[in-house]
Image 1 (spheres, protein in one colour):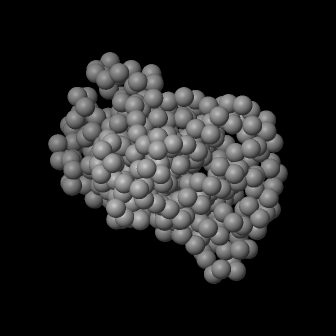
Image 2 (cartoon, rainbow, N blue to C red):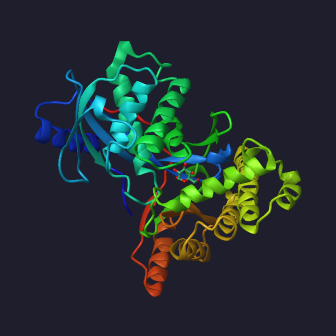
Image 3 (cartoon, protein in one colour):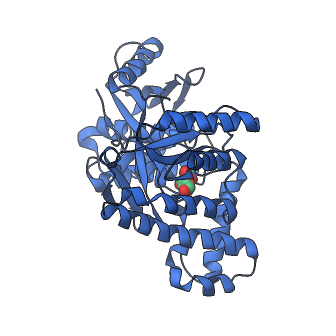
Amino acid sequence: MIDPWTPTDGAASARAQFAEVFGGEPDGVWSAPGRVNLIGEHTDYNGGLCLPVALPHRTFVALRTRDDGGLGLVSGRESGVWSSELTAVGPGSVEGWPAYPAGVAWALAQAGVTVPGFDAAVASCVPYGAGLSSSAALESAFAVAIADRVGAAWTGPDPSSDEGRAFLAQACVRAENEVAGAPTGGMDQAASLRCAAGHALLLDCRDGSTRQVPFDLAAAGLDLLVIDTRAEHALVDGQYAQRRATCEAAAEALGVPTLREIDPADLQGALAALGDDVSRRRVRHVVTEIARVTEFVALLDAGRIRDVGPLMDASHESLRVDYEVTCAELDVAVATARAAGALGARMTGGGFGGSAIALIDAGTAQAVADAVSAAFADAGFTAPEFLLATPSGPAHRDV
Ligand code: GLA
């Protein structure tokens, strides 16, 4: 199991790196979590519903402002020190990982904030490239750090309020879409900035509103096991953008602003109005998936957490057959976890690799993990990794 760092260890790691590269002390250390999505996949950019929880695994940023508008960045996961200036950052101007933090500075400035230059060191225990939103954790940690350091000169909504968190999330989305060039939909940034410990975040992407839904695994005698398949996953590649474009074209053909507006009761009529089978299957996934989120939340509200498994299974099938974003590793992980006793299992995040989640009885994580590892070895796949998703808190200042 990949255990999360303690806040003390995470902050110490970022600070040590900061001292080594930039010298002296940072102004503070801020951190933000990765996420898994319980259900509601590929719905965010369709104005739909999703239900993420924040992981206990976080990205830590030790940051000190500069008064010359310069930017210096270093990460424990990457080699070299990146240097630039705020005025040089914008769409298409930054390559690689610095596009995420520099993009957040740019997007906040675009939103009217007087952003200072800064030096910063990053340390993270969010698995990288695993579909667990390491990029949103990075963006969100910088967003709260910058907001904090702007202090009294801050012009946006109070960054500790929910409105302020939505404002920061929007800046992170612009950083990712416009500076890093990944056309993602916003669920991940909302999760990292707006989740609450012990809860899942019901996010309505039509208007950005949220509700904290109690998700007490321990009280139900359950664990949420994350299986990182280690299969390559890249959001900047064309597949994600293609799915999004197909949905947007279908919405236009159906005369609605987003697929959220298709009532599940009218699904057959909508499908009949579409000219091709691929669009029909994509639309069927989105409309049925949004309905599954509503059903899932109704079960949680009714205290029936142990009954959500079939909805997770149905979500995976829809993503496999209709949306076509799973892969052999994800399908084997999910099938094996179910055979080993999981109440339900599904891929989580963008797909095409990345991670799956399995809802399991507490105390069975190692047995399920062993079964999945054995199935992967039999299939000749790279060995998977595992962690437990204890619903955790949002981005904040640590030190
Ligand atoms: C990725 C994107 C999100 C969302 C999911 C699929 O994680 O970053 O915006 O679209 O895929 O639900």
